Length: 503
Image 1 (cartoon, rainbow, N blue to C red):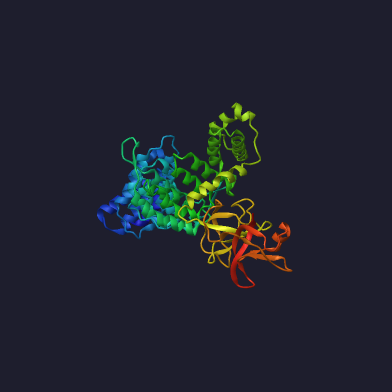
Image 2 (image 1 turned 90 degrees about the vertical axis):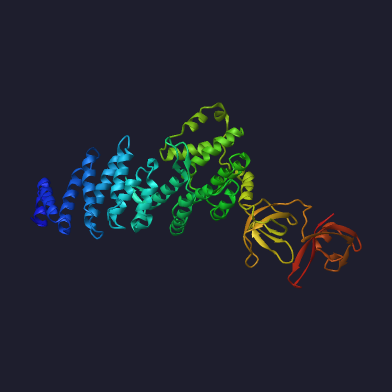
């Protein structure tokens, strides 16, 4: 009786005879590793034979027998091969009309003790199989922790192709699934009506999520789920403060504003502004279908029917392009009188620009606003020069922040860090009230002293440009009053005052 004889019987399909011989060998020498190997491979052949859902009991029985052999950890081959059969039957169970998660739990409990090579193609196959029905599987988090995402192979981080279409990598799917289950929480009653979120588990998972966000910037959804997890971690008073640092980094992603809207469930004005901001960003239309539909509902509620029809038509266009089914809500809207009478616009960009400043105020509310004065405007390049005081002055691009600024305008701005060579980045900007206090503006009154023949002059220490002299036909000694701006004279390398308005 030998390992070779048992192998020959297996080869010709005489599994019962092979099993009988393997059992006899085990009874005689139960600790002999060759006898254990022989039996394990017979049980493996039975796994192949019974790897269909309708033979579940027989499959489980042989799986348990492999486990009970207590093979050492370095006996990888039989476990690696068994992994393919385990994955096959799990996939089969997931395809049934009513998935029996009890059976999937049983298989998981058995294979916890299997020494499958990690990482490996077979181990990744095991993950894919059990992941398939994660949405409704109560043990998914436990399984994922056991499987350990550190065991993904390089190939698992790449997109796959299915029916000539690129699909999300299994690694990205895994991080999304784990995040969703953490957000969903565990059922604490028999009916799953009450759920408890494990905040400590979220804190443990976030560094892993951060790592994949950093290493795989092409992944669209992990940053979104990080945001959602941060929201779950925050208590009612600190949700926004816990989310803001991350939101600032991702403020050009539409979903950031969708999440901020969720933070203010009872403030419709803020929600509206956040959706305007989200839709103002450059984003592929495929990602905006749900967002546009929700926003259309807000517009309908406000009786802004032309704008609502504009959003609805964009949703319809995208869905038809991909042959996606129209939602019942969209269909109902298109059948109503207001929709038929409304006139769609080319886009709602003008509407977005009108409201989204309020959303930006939320994001940057912890950054101090500073009052500055517009000193010069280059309309062709959409750049303005500003001065706050003798220590802070420079220039920035104003496109997308405001329309047609004028010299002398007072602005309330939030700077994004310090300037470099005079150039500043701006987070928010809006016009301030003219009476706002600032070190860069002063009001003056006095006699005009002309400097001939250059035609410029002074009122005390305020410089009056030649254009004022010519336009107003000013004369020496004339009483003048107006506003002056703090200005740096590069030729003299000194600060002074320059009139910007005469009254």
